[in-house]
Image 1 (cartoon, one colour):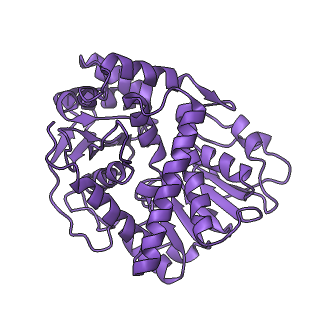
Image 2 (image 1 turned 45 degrees about the vertical axis):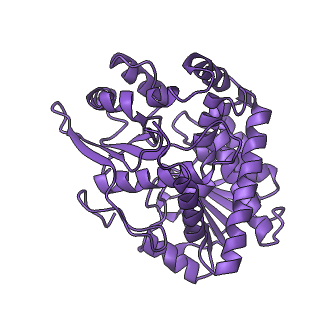
Amino acid sequence: MPVGPSSLPPDRSGGAVNRTPHLQLTWSDEQTGAQGYLVIDRLLRGVASGGLRMRPGCTLAEVGELARTMTLKESLVHQPGDRYLPFGGAKGGIDFDPSSPDAPGVLTRFLGAVSPLIHTYWAVGEDLGTRQEAIDAAVAAAGLRSCVEPALRHVPDGPAAGLRRIDDAFAVRVDGLGLGDTVGGYGVAQAVLATLAETDEEPVGLTAVVQGFGSMGGSAARYLARAGLRVVGVVDRDGVVADPDGLDVETLLAHRSPEGLVDRDRLPSGARPLPRGEWLSVASDVLVTAAASYAVDDANEGDVRCGYLVEAANVSVLPSAEKALLERGVIVVPDFLANFAANSWWWWTLFGDIGADAGEALAKIDKTMWRLVQDVFAEVRATGLSPREVATRLAERHHARFRGLPG
């Protein structure tokens, strides 16, 4: 990644000037030497929302860009009439291997160290390399009631009612998957379908490759296949599984590991494994990047062979690579538009905009995603700006409406 730990994140806004975040800090673990970072990009109503990731090589610059993305994501989605009003954006990151036996201790010590900020400002959840149950256990050990403690004071019918809705919602199952593992990828699939509608393309018969097969990528692949796209490739940590006739996504999901790995010993008929380095070798109409950040960079941008790239993972395309893709005519749907559903579902449920019901959740995601994609592409056509530039403008306009509200 071409940015250092002390540098500002690259400008992905299409011209907006990088600015100093509200707060940023660096933590060092005395036992392992791991470095941890927290960036609060902005506060709205005294709260900033964003997850905590753990991966080797995580930097302060990366966490800062992710925090800015969370600010945009929070603000973009707001619909007048919702009980949930946007918060600011934040992100945490730990430079450590989540598969290490020391990782749970590192996570617990980091969250314990920043627990005063979780109590006051930072509503935190799982992200790349962390699991919600581990975060919940760590914040409980630090003496906190919830990982979203600062948000609870805003729940209209009180914290107990909101947390009960969250617990009930996480217990809901959708065709073998938990609702919490469904909503994010479902929203990404709707982003694809709404974007195709804006360009007058029918989904049936088009092809898709999904990079990442965890909760986001697996669910996205499921709903793209159900919409009629042929999912011709999925990518996990161990490589690529491809089939030009279309993969049996349900079979892959049925035998997926908890870490989002495809079982190579139980591949459906026609599927063939390829090396990890060939993840861009499978051409498709739609590429969904649902794995790590900075997956598409200057070194591999020329290998991208698709008409639509949809960012299911945060900051998965470097700004210079996105510029080159746009110049080649590739439509890039930005992360804070494409992948808002998991974050928004959490808040809609906590605040009572929806109940603990899959039908309500998916219907609200549908309505919100299609409205936003239509708004973005209407302005793209009117101005000639990129989808990211337009979506950033919309998010900043929404954000401005909530500045100055009491915390």
